[in-house]
Length: 286
Image 1 (cartoon, rainbow, N blue to C red):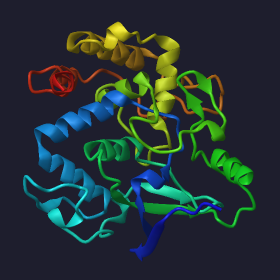
Image 2: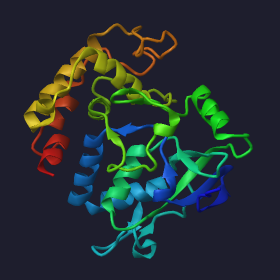
Image 3: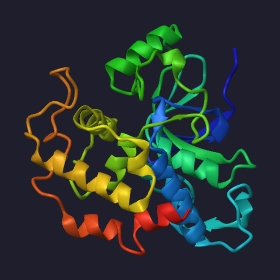
């Protein structure tokens, strides 16, 4: 049996493990690659942001000390403000499967961005284990459990997939692109506000609904102004829909209201995206 290489410890009643990024398995087939591309552009513009995001993901606050030569590949080249695990609630969640492998249940975009920022090194990351499922008798039972507890998203850009069709790793080069998921990233706080606590795969539910309302073409994502027009259209569609609209044909799926739909577009925040120093300008300069 192939076993993942990881080690664990308990911090503030949370079990944290450290694991090589290449050994982390996804629980969704796709990511919004425009979101990851924006993160990478942000890291290139402001290197502190990279180390801040890494330290936050370690449960260690922000970065306290780094230099131009610092890299995630060399842990001694920078220092986080707190010891790892000090804030376990900011560490991305995962489960351990019966085969000993680690499956990420939150943070696919963050892990993808951190990996892509340091492509020549297999960086080590901390994860917070919410379910240790090594006691289950088989991987088939494991996947049944994951679906029953809404810990896996088996919808790809082309439709439903089986668990065995999930990518082998988490990363921008191995996962599919879901442009609707990217749109929802940029519209957070503009056309919807994530409720607390948020249900798993919130943006994928909203993205699935948005896909039923509009088609995103390559031309829509080719330029900054085209992308801004796309965001404007998507924001209007979202706020104008009935709050009781289910996000999937399944009547058990969450409604737009349950997922934080706003009653009006926050135009100030929307316009800020398209400013010369806004997120879209940075994305399309990268």
